[in-house]
Amino acid sequence: MNRYASKHNLVDLVSTGMDECELPVKGARYIAGISGGVDSMVLLWILVRLLKVHVVATHINYGKRGAESDADEELVRLFCMENNIPFELLGRADAGSRQNAGSGNFQNQARTLRREFLLSVMNRHDARAIFLAHHKDDQIETIIQKLLRGAAPEKWTGMKRFDPPWMRPLLEASKDELQQFAQEQEIPYRTDRSNLESSYSRNMLRNKIFPLFNQAYPGWDKHVVRLSRIGHLHTSMLDYITGEVTVSRPDIGTGTLFEAPYAGNTEQTDTGHPFSTVLKRTEWLSLSEELQLPVARNWIEKQTGYIGWSKGEVLRLEDLKKLQTGKRVHFDAGFSVQRDREHYVLVQNRASGVSHEISLTRLSITPITACGFMFTENRYDPALQTGALQLNREALDAVILLRKWEKGDRFQPMGMAGRQSVADHLTNRKISSAQKSESLVLVSFEGKVHAVIFPHCLDSGEIGTIAEHTRCHTEGQRVLLIKKPDHFS
Image 1 (spheres, rainbow, N blue to C red):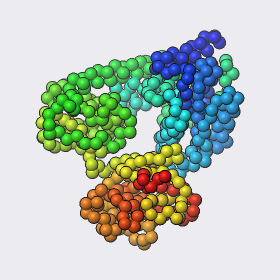
Image 2: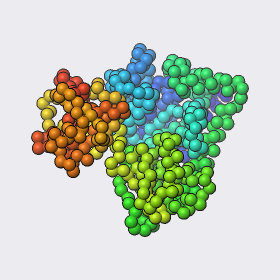
Image 3: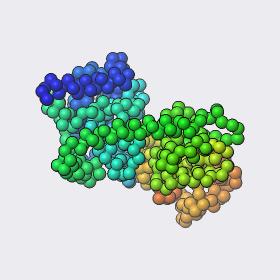
């Protein structure tokens, strides 16, 4: 490939992608996630230098690689200064320390933090879309991982070029093409040496498995890319069959139970109206056995946005076949499927064990509202005694759960020497029987209770009780602040 051809092909890829996705070049503002690696620096160079797109560049310094992380930040910052590109940074103090303070998989935590940061920058700048520099090699790795984890064919689609607001115009370009382009155009970039280590599954595939494939099965990567098309075809067929055995809500008879949408669904569903269709029992049972479970699962996913199926939950769909009218099959994510004569309807479990996941990494960017309470990050204020709870941020994991209290929940209330059950604590605080069932607990994934939250403010102004291990001692400590929204100015 000569110098002109390389430049022409990649620029056309980005430009054509924007046209096909109806993203205007002029008069619109966009966000771009820039790590400092070759793929994101090439994307930024094309958008700004050649297509003259108004871009706000963003960078996160996780602080995981010390001086190398700082060098990545400096490269992106200087490039933006030299090219008059607006630059937004989530620095080491705001990103790396939060990652280290939490527990769990760093890549998952980083992905959550990156997503929330990019969305917050997009909202502040009233941008049209967020550009990401995923390329063909990333797509291949994604599809292979799904295959190895036993994903169904409809999950082989991989990443979409435009999945609003996320725009990935380089999915058809290889890493080699991007590196050649950067060399030809003298685009600065840095190489993340941690990618050469095989501690993460993606790195192991890239560094150890794929080279063996290249030797044994030349051209294998092209066949994997085709699996994405097969995944899209399978999805289209599954959607068509699902449409044949479902009916929209207004068309069914009376007596069905429709409640609020699934609490875990934070994104717009494909239907545009959560829980807007029901499954026709006779038509569903007339499908071949091989199709029944995939269609039922697809129907639920379209309504709830839930994709975290366990093997047990998939098998639980079998119970729908023998379900009696009025009975339900419960799922772990907080919803049930209920039979209503000749239809199956989706119902949210009001007494669901898990209501909301609270990502503390997200709180550095934007408050979270759940179950009528607002969660945000702040500094400890000893003068704030009523109308709020202040939990020591360092005593909490990166992700915690807000749910209804359950029998067996125990904790050590702040200021007390011993532990007591949540049930006894609510009784001691003179919470009425009616309100008891609506009380909440903030817990770790292992079930450790960090706080009990009352459904209504007490006469004293208290909204709950924190556990002794989450007590703050020093003014200015980082805290998880919990308030009713109307307490905020």
